[in-house]
Length: 314
Image (cartoon, rainbow, N blue to C red; front, top):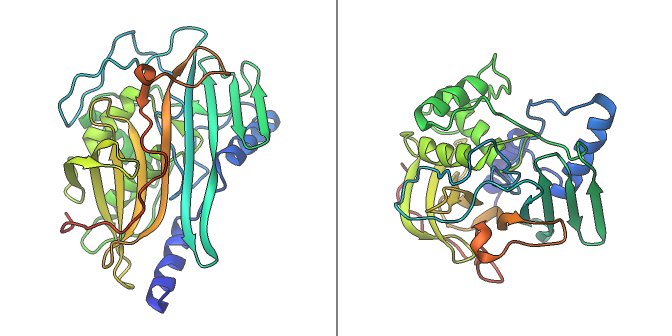
């Protein structure tokens, strides 16, 4: 690894520190909740890693049959709202080719019910939560209109917002406001905070972020698991080395987040990755989603993490 890349990654790690795995974060949140009551809606993680998102714990007050807007046209019949007594399921993992070799985080499986009950499974760890015990909070005041949501998220990440991200710009010519907005979205979409978006809010965020001048939108793309995707990308550049490109992959018909990659601008090599392997609705904490109930479908067994040919940045 070159000195430039070391300096770049150290700078990124300083501003966007890696988080513990999803299982540990949920355990920490549960413990904090038992000490303080309901977890604060403020963000506590700063994550550039794993995964997850809005689809992650996606219970919502939406009516049955409601469907998100989408950038790429498509007809999705996948349910986004769980019936009473059902659970939202997500299986997530991450990958980091660090100095000591490739670091692959064992996948975590999470079941979440609208009554804050559920289950977290990772390897031999199997933790179950009675109603009211599963950590996490939703943001019902956030709009599902992309334009309105964009303004709300900008306010949220501002200096006086609910989850301030007053960090310096990470690309020449980019305003601090846009950087804070992208960081706020990153926290929400990659499970980097203690608050979650509903599926309809995720679909709105998907559409909203694509309107930013600093974000490039590519359709007809496949994610690392070979799943059809729309890819949104933006540059992180500290003027040290070639900089990085952040790639976000969304399911085209449900508008749900599927994966995030950090990619070397010059070589196309993947520097870090996180993803949702599957997400959907199940009837119990012993089940996994059927294909027809998965708003993030399963893909190939192993992700393709070979270098990516990048287009010119937005």
